[in-house]
Amino acid sequence: MKDQNSIPMGGQQAPDLSQTSVIKSPDGKVIFQSGILLRSVSRFLLGTDEDALVPIQCFYEPTSGKIISSSLPKEIRNDYKDFLFEGEAETNDTENVSPSMVINKD
Image 1 (spheres, rainbow, N blue to C red):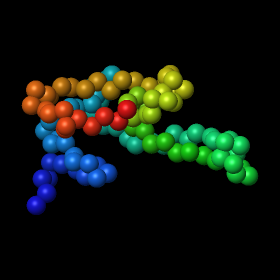
Image 2 (image 1 turned 180 degrees about the horizontal axis):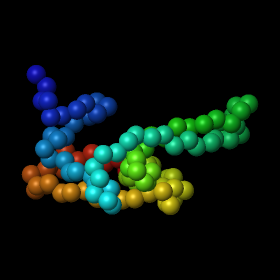
Image 3 (image 1 turned 135 degrees about the vertical axis):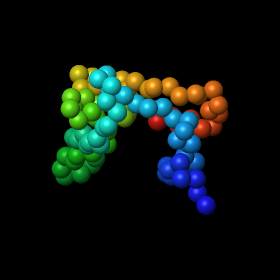
Image 4 (image 1 turned 90 degrees about the vertical axis):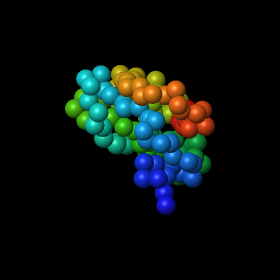
């Protein structure tokens, strides 16, 4: 029987949720929405007849529309610098977290 405090993550072992941190907006809000940024790719780069759109999922605070910077790939964060904020992690007791439990998106 699977642990109900873990969620599958693309074939990786999911962390124990009790060992994770709360992410807060600068206003202290903890509810976020998922959004999609669209990037245009030239047909010359793709070798196709038409330009294409690339969807990039991100998470944002719905009232301000500000995007959590860590939800974007590093390569494009500078393009959105005026629309980003650093999600403030409210730390839990991380002394008991082994390095193998940490999932790094970068």
